[in-house]
Length: 467
Image (cartoon, rainbow, N blue to C red; front, top):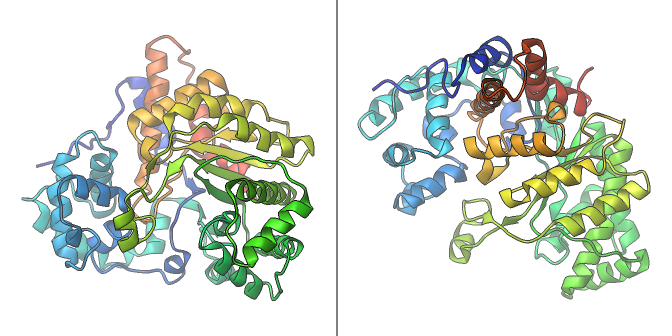
């Protein structure tokens, strides 16, 4: 059966079609936040089969399969790639209304030229055809990036990483810019078990003895410098519960030493440490011209039995519902008072926070760059047609959607770039709908500028990629 992915997929009026086909469709991609493995880009990896590239590490698909009653052996277990693929094919027909249904068929068409609906009946033939094409150089990792006109990839990297793959890619002149992003979560959450081993590792990579808080900050600063030398353009922070509690440096030093001695710290002590440390980081980011990405509100590792078995990022995270406005405002304002607030992107996993973030962003704009503080794109559970439309409508209602830096994949899969196409179709249809409803003029020059900027030019300017 032929798929429903036509040229005019998700484009429901003539203005939308014109905007997409004449402007959005062929724009390059700046994917400024993802979890791709830079080592696989360096080696120009070819994947063994579609299960490896499609199902490996994709907890979106894993959650859908679990919801369909598939046994874990076929999800993260030791079953063969073909057996796992068949179970995914069994799940797909049950996912109508979920973006996975659209992404699955977009990816089959765009990468494998397979214009068939995936189900149990079609799965064996699709397996064979997809694997045949995966074996060709045209679907190596680098070939995929070039095919999709990807200009910039922002990976997510721990401050203790050596960034050797980034360095090697730059030295060999690979035409796609692969940039590290500074993700210091393990060094921020002092209350977690991962903190002490991470501090030890930080000392090793900076050739320093970290026995007090000053030494800790000095080592962190060195890694910020190291990342900057390797082309870093942004930091990233996963903050499940927004924090802000002021403290003097001497107090934070005592908290740090207490933790180094192996003692647990109180909730208040942890909050003081995180606040002081992230404020210090924010000032350094501002000096480097980086963007600071704050991903807020996830409720992680809810299924403790499965977490113990599989570890983090395996599909057992969901949406938190704690309040964020007051502490977020205090944090941003503390940096703003020193004129040290970096470019900042605010994301929330909970759509209830959309108005809060859109309004918050407006408090801290400046002439430094249009849209200095961004209400970031629909993230994670909101990465749907409704979620993306709601995010853009909220931004347009409260701020200026014209300065929005647009889409990212936030993905571990090299087949995820059609999500940019998905976003672009939704954006063009939204603008076209506003024209049809007489909410905006049918000024194609103006509308095309919006599309070009939101899909490409704004991010290029925001991350300083013009050169």
